[in-house]
Amino acid sequence: MQGSTRGWGSGLLGVAIFSGSMPATRLAVLGLSPLLLTALRALIAGVLAAAMLAGTRQRWPDRGQWQRVALVAGGCVVGFPLLSALALQHMTSARSLVFIGLLPLSTAVFGVARGGERPSAAFWIFALTGAAAVAGFALLRGGDGTPLGDALMIAGIVLCGLGYAEGAVLTRDLGGWQAICWALVITLPLSALAVALVWPAAGVASVRWASWAGLAYISVFSMLIGFVFWYRGLSLGGIASVGQLQLLQPFMGLGLAALVLHETIAPAMVAVTLVVVGSVAGARRFA
Image (tube, rainbow, N blue to C red; front, top):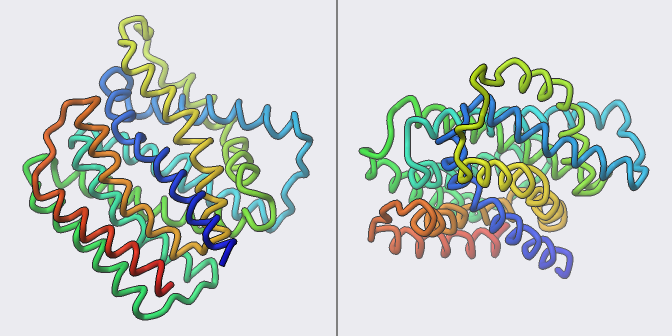
């Protein structure tokens, strides 16, 4: 019980950090292309991760663990960052945050498929209720995006759910920060090459400070620090159950979007928030 409580606390802190990802990405893509942004955030976080691993002399993963590291990298370092950045060219950050409400369901499904978890039927009822509430709200706000943007976000969420589940399993053997650090390190050659290939011929002197601030946040917090707490929470409290905390991320992020980007928040969000909070509480009770 104590481990589960620590897991939920750590997971909640990770969600709070992740809640700034979409608004920060929205700021960043105002001045940087999605491809350059994805490459730069992975490169910056990868360099920091390599320094952390080398400085603490961590052991290398074995052959079986490298497969999970690769899946984490594909889902969380490359797949979701790139697809969400592309999606944010076709929607507001407020709309993208609502789609994050589908991520707990994706994580739970992969927790069953890859992590061997078996949540109760009641858990799935609460999980589906929360996901339906968030997805329904997204459909009602249809004027804020395009079908292409929606499709990109959904594809990114599937890959991210896979990366979350694999990272949580890997954390049990390597540790939370080590798992994401190795995933970042193995993408370093690819991210460095990508930065060189997509670097604009005109340079980046005209990029405004707000875009650089967005890049700094998603590189340090979204790509590295947030995962340390998130993977620890999933590992201690259960992938499916703690994963439901991400239902709260859209509402944390929407508050930031209103504060930083001055985006309008619909009054219906209050009602949806109450449904989501109830779903998270129910999922925790019956997981």
